[in-house]
Length: 323
Image 1 (cartoon, one colour):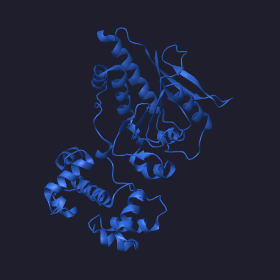
Image 2 (image 1 turned 30 degrees about the horizontal axis):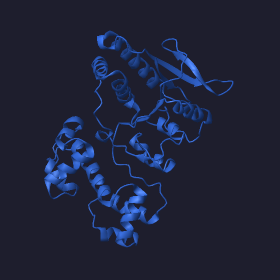
Image 3 (image 1 turned 90 degrees about the vertical axis):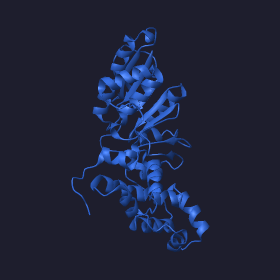
């Protein structure tokens, strides 16, 4: 029997808990109907919450009778975003389950709760892109990639935005129940199979929570000119540093090289123009700082995961032509 535990910690979004419950129970029923799955273990969905008397987590709901410890534990997003206070009972319970072999997973701000276990150290994880700066400050040993919606690192799975619970559940279903079940669930719920990325939707939210004042000056300078002035000598002059020192300290403070940083600033500006104007794509590339249209398209696709034309088709809101 495989039990998936959904943790109803303080502030956890009930819509996500109930949505995941429905989706996972549907996956269990679909799997039962497939001949190849006839002898598989039953999937049980449970909800866990802190007992008022002890504060310890206990089952408050189970889709079927279950007496074993959970195989997968999921921390849903919090309705009001990350909490700064820690819960030692949740931390110890998660560490106990992990030591027993359970897979731990988080969605959006739930990553802050899971990160308090210390299990993110030296791992690649994701959370909602707007929390990246706060997350880096709180968990400096984690490698944060907010371009991605789901990162499956074996015993730890993290998902990005609030609605990324659909992506997380489909990832879990594919991994533990097979692609055939996952595809049937996706078709039934009219949701995209895993493959989209958070980079389609995110802006660029650079890390400014570090304490390097010289690098903050460079970041402010790059932001003010939208990444168009990228000469290393000019950036070093802003920081009053030697060029090699600037390059080393910049990457340490921000997590990006100077080139990666200004490219993301330019692409973020280009995404706005693609959404809100009818400017030709080559013109947008020129406006944001690229003299070579082909270089602009390559950089945009590498960072966003979509070509500029595909991005415009998905997200354009403009109905007017801008001269």
